[in-house]
Length: 317
Ligand code: KG4
Ligand code: ZN
Image (cartoon, rainbow, N blue to C red):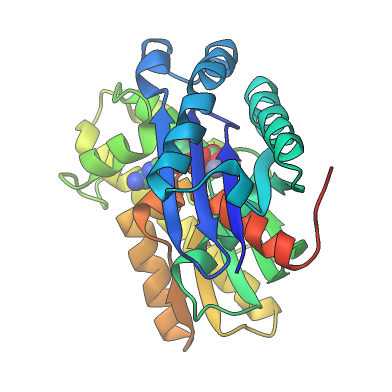
């Protein structure tokens, strides 16, 4: 059994967590910067970097205290090493390096996407490799054949916007504020998903790639003509239809693994989860989605990816 300290600071959440290789989450602490960025309608990198500097040290101390351990008990320190906003990534990575050096323990540099990609395995001990992963976050929209730590075959990606970005831009157009995903989902609950026939970019095409820029522009053209709730619901339905169609095409092209898995911030969306669950059932696959708090950025997923890499001997300096 090993104990991993994980740090996350690549966007607008500062987080520290302690996770064991046998999937016990001893502590997870998170400070969101939402309130600081809200007046600007999106994440301001300079504000983010400075807020990470202030928050990270106390969060690490709080996580160690909650878990009842000291730095000396930790077997490795895992930190997000990118991709992300460079100021924030540097704060977390350099802090991780310093802590690892001080403790005389290895550093595990974790790709933020690998943190999301492996997070379902932290919550579900039954989920083995390989699995088909739909990774939907604020910066990415990909289909990955996940074969093990560091072993990913990318089957599809977005040719323009990420799915979370589409939610955020739609929220902005609708004046729903930041962060956009949960706000659009909330409004969509009271709207009619069939009210507006939005485009479904790339649906039906043979390559399983994604595109959301045209959908966002289409939303921009109907603002004021329909109730915001109907726009939100119709937009969300279009995104769901794109995600499902593209996942279907990807499944047709591979030897389907036992499980269909979703991760990343947009995986917190109930409509997305429901539609993927239906698709998995139709294909006789297991459907796995992490609990909501593990879908959006957090440090437990970084600690867990660190634990998986550490167990595989993949450490950094
Ligand atoms: O994974 P994440 O926390 O950060 C990145 O790595 O990007 O994802 C954040 C994205 C944002 O675009 C946010 O609007 C979206 O996930 N999101 C949602 C929901 N919750 C978060 N999108 C749709 N529905 C949600 N409930
Ligand atoms: Zn993320």
